[in-house]
Image (cartoon, rainbow, N blue to C red; front, top):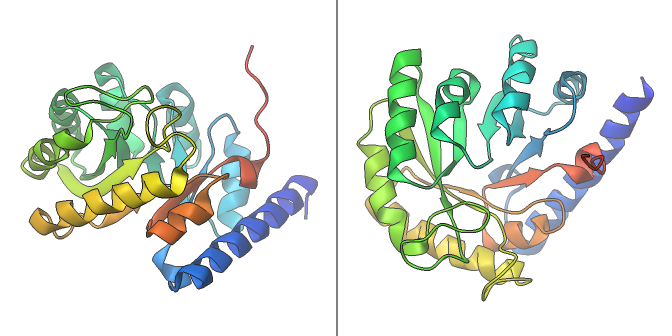
Length: 239
């Protein structure tokens, strides 16, 4: 086993132990939580190692990095999640490899994703990114729609050809009433998820929690956690 494979295996085992312990503490079954490994800034060789180690869900946040990496790993059975803020001029590329776009936060993006998905002959899963730090009608500092815009976007996704409404996603906010209160933020997201499922029963995916706060996300009820640093290591600073 190579040094890198050994390192990733050990890191994955630690993350798995954290998720399993969090599930036990929350009275949940381990299979209720899916680990998505965020592979941004890391090479395709790491993605291949992760696949060998049993990882099946990976995430990227920049199309210029993700597109060539996805192409290089096209032979692997992976579900690719796009989790970054998405500009409409990148949509056509993202729609060619992503299985799920977790950062849907405006109707213009829904329209663009629908057109691209139809063109590619693919169905894209879509999560609405909720900004818990955004006022009505605004977007969050890290992307996302204000909570009062969830239903309008959900209806737009559900009626758009080529798209499937999967659920909700959030990033714990750095400002506003939920700053530093990850568990409260994730509990709030679960309230929105429950409300959403009232009108869209199949939209039951809740993506929340990262390396530092995955336990809080599992405790709140998240179905997917997005973990990068705890698996791959601290990323080198750019520039």
